[in-house]
Length: 133
Image (cartoon, rainbow, N blue to C red; front, side, top):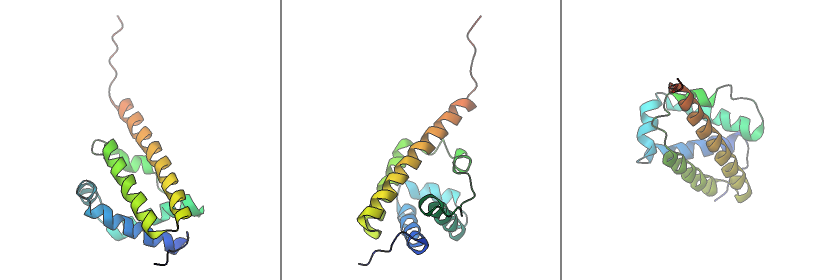
């Protein structure tokens, strides 16, 4: 099987293959299906994200943290782990080993940052009770 290089076409193929697996996953699929109303548009956005991250194209203009904030109660650490496991499997299957490793490292860093941001903002949203006299 020929594996595409890390370019726009390769990223498009990878994102489509990955989210096909996500949608079929018993844990992740229902969450994504509840949230995403236009899959072709969403896949274009995600491809633009990875293009910006990996190729430095600047095509992604969104804000991942606010986009995920409204779903923070549904996004558990276990789901992040599942997402990363599927990403590892998909990148290993569809990309050369060195490219897959780079994509996997980048995804793990992004997941950690997003988890931290979601938990940080969730704590800030909870009213703090002052117990001082």
